[in-house]
Structures are given as structure tokens and as C-alpha cells.
Length: 432
Image (cartoon, rainbow, N blue to C red):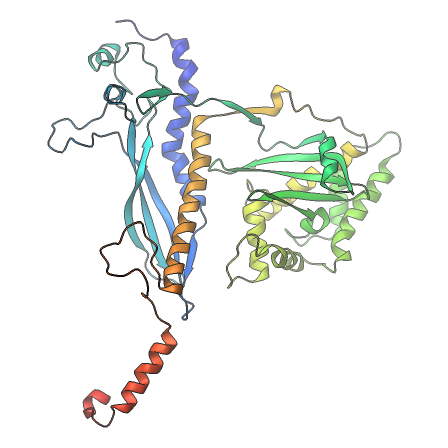
């Protein structure tokens, strides 16, 4: 029996390895980095935390094989029936009182995920050419694709900007962001362990300072770099000044004084707003963005500011010192490019690119959809508790869809009134 050429197997190996990463370590990273949601009970202000744990993808099984000896679903069956080669996807829904206590675990089927052929979840993984032919497959089957509705589909490997690499660019489009913006900016594409990414920029302004740009949803926001630098650690302006100038290349033509003047203006941005400590800077940002990031009402402005930096600013780094160093590197490259001390990066060079693998794409998609699932669950439960109205696709075998909750204060009032009016007729032991 003829085996597939090794060169053909190596061609699809990145696809298969990437998918194996996704259904194993990738999904685990996705649920670990998901932010738990808190559901607040009206009236009592008690909160419950909800999050996901223990994701797992099963091998494909036949839906109508209850009494069959072999319940395995093979790719050939899906091609002939025009169905999808997929496996069950389960998650553990965890619920815990925000104040502490034991966590309750509910295992739920979240749906089915398409399975890539010759991956670890595929039955063809370790079959020999003779065994493949016995299963009505090609002897040279290498996999690396999916079967969706009976059709074979493959995920393209698209080109993306290189991750965790500061690029200095000049683009005329940057000037359209405001009258004070120039065409100079530095970019950094940040990627977390769950493959979710966010690109941030430092823009050079006409007054010699810089503005940090990041996105929330589909909107773009700008924060003075001088304010952001003071959010991470308790560092003096002199230390900021020295660390920033150390990262900027020396100018043999004597232009260092201009760069130093720009760095000094940058560091004065926080003081001009009356901000002198990291706590003040975090509270300032928290008060501005708490509505945009949908921070809970019980969180202080300081906690909202910390949430902003953790979720939207340099998301690939978790330690404040690392975030500070990355921001200093972006700012130093920005000033060096504006002063002509370094060349512009070539965005079309191979060294500035990376390939988007199938596992990375699926991890990004799954992280977004699971976060949406938790958010929708929170909103539906809070709507039920606040209004008493049940929103459902079916009747849930209930006789009504409204009036499930009442205000607890009214309930206590009527209960006390009833008890007072009937107290003379009640037995002594019942009154007690």
C-alpha cells in the first residue's frame, strides 16, 4: 500500500498541530483568562460569581447509534450523509457566592465543534494506509481539513503583523485623528495566551508629547503617555527621564537636547492634570472609563482603572513593571523615529509578519463567544430578578411569563401588617 509522501505530511503538519493545541492547551487558556461575571441580587446587594472551567472536546459519535455496537462516526459517513464531522463540547459552569463559600459545578453540553481530520480527536489519527482503505478513505490521506455539511473545507493561513514587536511607521492617515497628530507612530500587537490580540499605538503629537491609543469594542480611545507611565509603579520623574533617554539612540549631530526636551514635556502631562501618584492616575482613568468598560457599581475608581490596564492596555503582560518597560520602549522608538535617529520599519518585510494558524483563529473566536455567553447569562438573570419577567424561547412548562419577583420591602411590610392584625387571635407559641 502506497503511503503519503513525507513532504505532503509536513505541508499540513502546522494545521494539525495547531488544531491539537486548540482542543488541548488552547481551550484551557481560553477559559482561564475569561473574566468571571458577577450577578447582583436586587435589594440585598449579594453577588454571585459565574465562570467556566474544564473544557473538553469529545471524539465524533453517531447521533442515532443508541443500540449500535460501534458508535464511532468516521469522515466517510459525513461525506455521504452531507453532515459535519464534529465532536461534543462540554464545559463546567461554576457558581459561587462572591463573599466566599463552596463553588457549585454544573456540567453542560455547549454544542459541537468540527474536528480536523488526522488530529488527536479524529479516528484516522494512527491508521495505516491499509486501515484507511478499509474505512473507505484514501490511502494517502493526510488530513488538515474539516468536513462541514459533507464538503471538505480548509482554514487559510492568513498574514498578520508580528506579535510583541515594536514597529515605527509613518502614515498620513495618522494625521486624520486630530489636528495635533503627526504622521509618526509606533505599533505593538499584543497577544495573550488564549491567542486574543489587541494592537496599541503611540502617536507623536505636534507639541512634542505622545498619546497612547487602544481600542474598546470598535471604538478607539487616546490617553496621554505621561499619565499612563505613572499608573504602573511609584517612579520619580527623574528616573523616568533617565530610563527613557537610555533607550533612545545617541545623536552624533547634537540633537539630544531636542529629544530631552520632548521627554521632559511628556513627563509633565500628569502634573498638569494634578496627578502625582499611581493611585491618582488610576483613579483618574477609572472615573473616565468605568462606563465604557462596564465596570460594576461596587468597584471603586481605582479598581476600575486597574481593570482598564489589565484588560485593554498591553494585554500580553501581567506585571506592572513589564507593562511599564514595554510602554517606555514604544515611547523611545517613537521619539527616535520623529527625530530621525532610526529608520522606519518595513511593514511589508517577512520579518514583520506571522501566519494565522487554524488553532489561533479558533482560540480567538472561542474566547469572544464564551465571553459573550457569560455576559448574556448575567443580563438574562439580572433582568429576571429586577423585573420578574421571563425571557425564553419556549414556555418552560409555566403558566405565565411575568410576575416572578416582587420587591422584598413590600413583602415584609404586608407580612408585618398581617401578623400585627392577627396577633390577638394567634396562639402564644405561634407569635413566638
